[in-house]
Length: 568
Image (cartoon, helix red, strand yellow):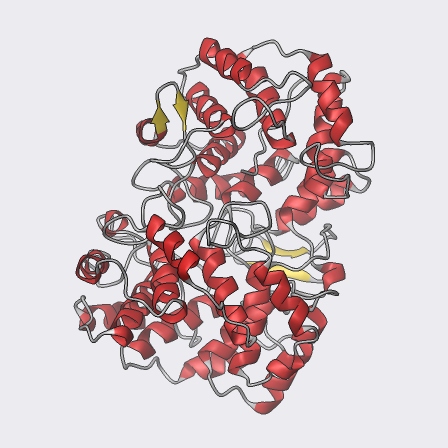
């Protein structure tokens, strides 16, 4: 049985979770880019199918989404367009993509989605997309360079945003993304780096420890390949090198078959560890390179794309939590697996082990019972949540990402579960920035919807400012006559909106017509299948099946209140 070593909590077995066996966008990009670096793209099993998988994430607005049906964001757009180009199928027409990028320009930098505050993740992704994919300069390079200048902290490192820089919270990932954005600008048209380069280099080098590996920041527990790749990449872009011991650190993280693991004591060879190893050592030793190519072949999914490890064992936190909440067998083992997704350096739960911790996944894991009997685990989650709150008072999906209502509502639910004390004034400030009349948008400046409005009202309820009257009015406005609730207007109901409606009603003590909801649930689900809207065919999507099962239990008197889990 595989095991994971946590620095303060000992070795814990990796109990089986569950997953979909389907490809993941991050994994697909990482696998393709790694093979491109190794000059082994000929080993992609189904290049046409993988290209189609990426292309199918494109939305009508010109951007790309993490999965079909989700809104476009800079993260998904960068990964899709870069991997398609690596596979020899670049976008033939980038005009729509450029139009979407312009919508994410804040005036000084790029946001992950239109309306969000800019951050260095999104600015890196979109600056490179503009230059490398669209062949265009950013809307205002002088203002962007000034924004990048504002990322430097007093200690010399770079932070996620200028607002984060004021707290002194630098991170090697933020350094890499800021430097890579500058380098893309300079490649398009010469520009000097906008920082005190010597101070920046000094801070980066100070994150390399005696093992030769790098940490994310001073307060990080364990050096890992992700931090090492980003730090060495940042230094290289500035014409500097880490200590020579970095090569030994990387080679020392070869796993059982010769591919790579993220850090010492973690037994799972995965796609991002090999991606980081190949990115750090641009000339991997031949034996290691062949082991990586062989491992990536094992991680390929039938029909195109890749997941993070062998598809049959590529479990994820959302699917596993959904199975527990749905009442599947072996729930206790699956809860233990969810707890094993709390890995070193971040106290939250990761979507897939070895990747960064995410707010929604943490909320789902807690709702499924993770850490219920583990006060140390809950304490780590609480500490992580407090540190994750952005300067604007809201929360993003992961560390450094701009705030949105889904993540903020998920953070509040998770904080309630573990007793974390968030900045209440900051939460209220973020809500005000998203308010449109009596409704709320997902991000400032966007159109309000039912789900974002109800998520905001649940946050207000947690802040001691409930408004059941307004919630009842909002529910009436989105009530669909034939059953269910619609996210916009009152014509097309969907499962996510109906779940949110019942969840908010329960929280605020608003009565809901059980027959009205029951008719909708019967249209979109059976005991074994479910779909998101009445227009889509029934399928086996685990998250849709979970929400439908919870609604059935809620109105079948088997559940007194719905768990506070959200997706979008």
